[in-house]
Image (cartoon, rainbow, N blue to C red; front, side, top):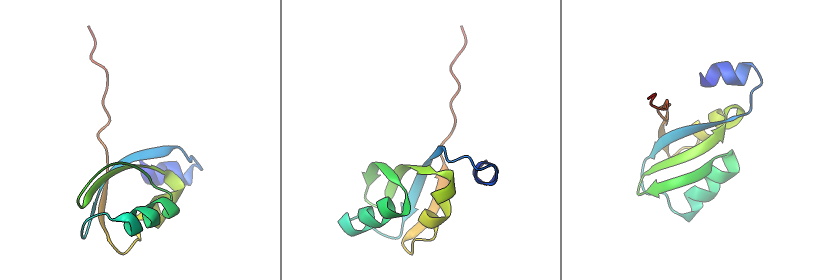
Length: 79
């Protein structure tokens, strides 16, 4: 999905769950933000973020980012 969005020129944000090689301190927060991530919840080395599709590669290439996974898409329950 992320590759399809980037190829189509869609810059809409992707909601991701990421893990880092260690705790996310102020310096790492700044690097993530500069790379394009809008951080949500941060707990030690885990974080959630909204990242524009065309910035995903920049965030993934940060030396302390171990993994990025797209958040699960939830559909509303029908009556």
